[in-house]
Image (cartoon, rainbow, N blue to C red; front, top):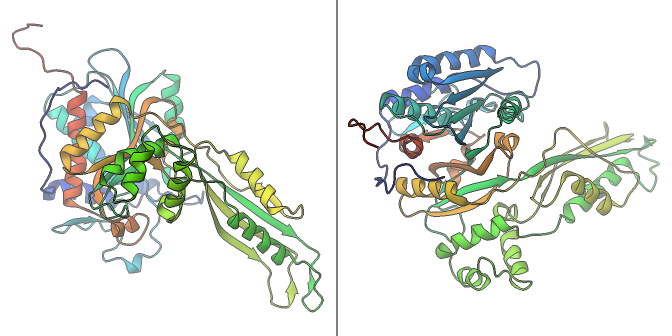
Length: 472
C-alpha cells in the first residue's frame, strides 16, 4: 500500500480522550449486545439501541457512507475518489460475551461507568472500542473534507463471539460476489503488551498476520454397566480417562512456522542473552536442523509461547457415571485443539485415533471447526501499520505473529493482500485477563491511541486535497 501522505511526522499520544468522547463509548457499553450460542437468547432490543446510538452520534458517517445490513451486522462502503483496488476492510464486532460473574465487578458490567482514568464495561476492549474508534475517525475525516483515494469498507459483525455465521460470513460473501480484493484487512487480535514477553523490558507490538484454526474432538465410550462390586477389567470411565491421558501426553509435534521465525527475528534486538545470540546465529533464513529444535523447545517451555509452535491440546470437559456404586454405561470427554498452520482438522482427528489406540473409544468432531487461515506476508500494508503504531507509542518492538483464538477475519480469508490483526493499545498481563473476564476496562489514554491510530490510517488512505489553482 503506497502511502498517500509522504513522510508524515506524528507525535506520540500522551493524553486521554475527553469526557464527550469517553461517554459515546460508555453509552455503547450500556447496550448489552450479548452474543449467545443459545438460539433462544434475544438481544434484538440491545442491538437496536446500539444502532440508534451510532446513527445519532455519527451523522456524517451515515449521510456519506452506504450502509448495508446483514441481520444486526453493518457493512459500510466509503467510496473512493479513484477507481482501482479497494484500499482497506476495517473489521470490528458489536457483540460481547456474557458477564456471568457480575457481582465481582467493581462496576456493573453494563453500566458504562467513566471515571478519570478508565471507561468500564463488557466490550471496552473486546471489541466495541474498535467499532467506536473507527467511526470517530471516519466522522472526523468527513468533517475535515477527507475522502479515501480508493474505497474503504467498515464491517461490524454482530455474532463474532458465536463464530460469525450470521454476520461475518454473509458480509464476506457479499464482498466476494462484488469482486473485492483489498490491500489491507485490519481486525482485532494483536496489541502492545508491557512486561508480558519473558525477559523483554520494552513494549511489544504484535501485528498478527493470520490465525490458528480450531476443532473440538469428542471422545466417547459405551459399556454394559452394572454394579461396582463386580467390575470388569475395563470400565467406561477408566477407558475414557486413559484415552484423554494419551491425547494430552502425546501432543502434535513442535514446529517453527515461517511467520513465527519472522516474529523471533524481529524481536531478537530486545531479547536477553543467550536467546539473542541464538537467534542471531539462526538468522531470519538460517534456521537449521540444529537451531530449530532448540528454539522450539525454549518456546514450548511456557504455555503462552508453546501455542506459537504447535497445535495445542486442551481437555476441557469430562463426564460419566451417576453414582459411586454404579458402573456407568457411557462416558465422554471434549478436547479442544487450536491448530497451527500446516496442520488441519482432519489431521487432528487422525492424530487422536492414532495415539489412543483403542477401537472402543469413538473419536468424532463436536461442533463447529475452522481450518488455520492463510498467513499473509508482511508487505507495505504491514509496514504502514508498524509505522503508525511506532508513532503512537515510541520505543516499542514491532513483530508479527498468529492469533491463537478465532476472529471474524477468518471468514474474510483471501479478500486482502495483507491481513493484520492489531490494535495499538498497551496492555499488561493483568489487563489481558480482563478480556472475557472480570472488570473489563479501557484507559482513556488507550482509547485516545485507538482513535488517533484510525485517524492517521485514514489520512494515509486519503486522496490529496484539491488544488485551488486547478494546477495538476
